[in-house]
Image 1 (cartoon, helix red, strand yellow):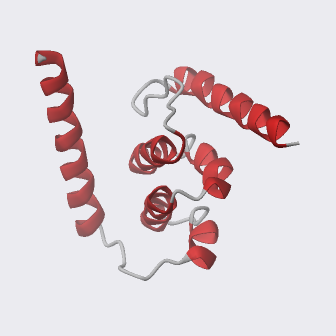
Image 2 (tube, helix red, strand yellow):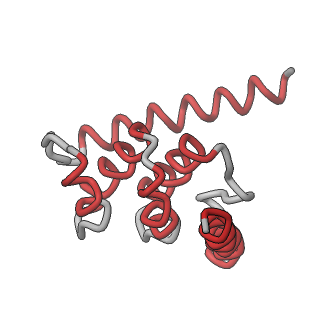
Amino acid sequence: MMKVKKITGWVLILAAGMFVVFFTSGCSIRSLGMANYTRDIQSPDPCIRMKAVIYAGNSKDKRAIPLLVDRLEDEDEAVRVAAIESLKQITGQDFGYRCFDPPYVRAKAVQQWRQWMKEQATRKK
């Protein structure tokens, strides 16, 4: 029970920190919609990428999964955090991905995501 409380506490702290960074870092408040988020998720601006990633997760649009997996390798840590949380919202999976792990460890989890996407595509055929 103590471990769950510690984890929950860290998640709340992380979420609050992301909220503060997001709204104090000059991220513009512009409306996102289906047409925009797929473009914005690849924006050069990390604030726009993060908003688009969050929108994708909240919309639970499975078509966004490949774009979200790409964002797991984003240079911006906040975008990576949002990407894995959005993927978990959509799929219920994380494949051991931890946004704070070293790049070589994250790369292994990203490879698992890419393999999972291939398997999902094969099942649909």
